[in-house]
Image (cartoon, rainbow, N blue to C red):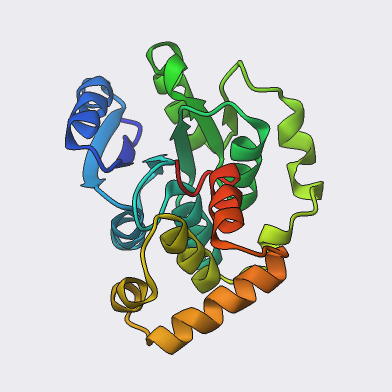
Length: 211
């Protein structure tokens, strides 16, 4: 018998994960091996369980799906990622693909395309929802973006700042000092040429880090 597609589901809503489990779990060639409620947990499970595919929502607190995908890629974890998102804007798609995602599925087309997308990505192919221009697959790597200048830690701090957390809360969440948080914030503002927290929040929203 052919090996089953071993799937990890990552979404911060338990009911959403349950819905996906019902859809995917009834397929004879698919098996749900774990569920994650956050980006950090998704990375840990991907590293430990080595699934065939990680199906991950883009919008999660603390660490979103795009950043989790980027860290999976940077850590050399062999786990193709299929991103789920409600956004069809080019910036969301491009950031996901640049982070290393192999597929991008719009939530509006899950009924028609979820199984097709999972099988495509698990089989080593790319997948984009039909509503998204195929040209993104060809040109996303060529896009120059100041966001690429940020380190993984700076991207984490950027998201937490944009979510409204203060330096003390960020320091506690990342196990670093308040001084280090302030230093990261300063470098982020400089690298992105931002002048205020409001501009930082707008930038993070454009990148799909917060909603």
